[in-house]
Amino acid sequence: MKKSCWILAAWVAGAVTAGPVPRNVVLFIGDGMSTPQRMVAEEFARKAGTGPLAMNALPNQATTRTCSASSLVTDSAAAATAIACGVKTRNGSVGVDAEGRRLESCAEVAKRTGRQVGIVTSVTINHATPAGFYAHQRQRSMLYEIGLDLVRSGFDLFMGGGLAGANDKTGRVEDVGNLYDYAAALGWTVVEGRGGFDALAGTSAHPIWYRDGEQALPYAIDAANGANPRLPELTRFALDYLDGRADEKGFFLMVEGGRIDWAGHANEAAANLRDLLELDAAVKVALEFQAAHPDTLVIVTGDHETGGMTMGFAGTGYAFYMERLAHQTCSSDAFRDRYHALKAKKGTTFDDVAALITASYGFKFAPDEAGGKNDPMVLKQGDIDSLKRHFEGGGLTDKLRRLMQNTAGVGWTTGSHTGLPVLTTSAGPGAERFTGLLDNTDIAKTIKSFYE
Image (cartoon, rainbow, N blue to C red):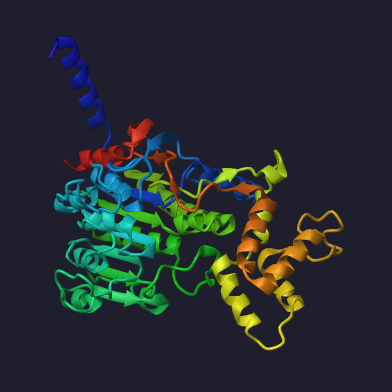
């Protein structure tokens, strides 16, 4: 190597590891969250008088590539592996490289070097994104084996949904029975629901595994207020618990807003932005912790974009009315359940369903004094006729979902993932290393450099 090239290489290598090193690292991942999702939520929050988003106001920003080893469009498993381990893998694999060889995640490096480690998510705890930090399986569908990896991880705290799908015994290589019982036998304190969570206050139990039933947490838009802890409350507990157990080496915490992705697949903007706003509320909790613990680094990123969301729709021209999404009070899934229950009752008419539509989406079937004749939520006769046809022939929920997106001016290009880059923002010691154009593998590489 020429001397000038050697000097440049040495400078680049030094630049990666130079600078302040955080005691604590808090990594937030919005599943399916790219710039469009963050900006729709930003504009919604500003219109509501609560903006800007905390995650968007972080001082250091980087555009981040998301491709996997097998495709320009990544899935969550490959993306989580890249973010957690710093190595590209094939879509569908977690914690292993493209040839199936085991990788070490930044969370595992943190634990190996004496730090406390926690994982929090709003979806099932054996889902692809959290699994990327503790599991090592060729296929994300190996849910039981991923659950085994969780129990044997040596981590200190897991919080989120349950192990949905892990009861399927098809193809199991090893079977230790019920994984919750197995975890308890190995010393885990496993609790469930609001009662179990509240009982953890001031606990010295270790390690801890909290689950919200067997499935993912409900969409934020559907959550019963105070019923079970949500992402901000789980984040606050995790921060205090890990910090209380940590020595001078500190802790690593990953928090995932997983339902953002699910709403993206459904092309449902109202549910999407509510879960994103909830993730932002969890970021605010971390920033409050950071204010009292300035040796904490906070990073917010996404694993990929979902849905091809756009801030604009041909039917509204150059206008964008994201504030109209505030009228929607439940997800389309929740509406579908209520609608089917109502329609199953003998004698249900379209007028009965119209009242449910107004309560759920804010659409009005005639002007009222509050909005007047120019109220944008008043349905045109053609839309009313179309809704009646769908009431008779089926597909009413999907029709309402599309009508809501069009009314707000939110466009979608797909029900799957896209190859769009994501936005990574950060604040705290070491945050200056997350700027410019990054690859998602750079996130893990940089976090690992803090530990070794």
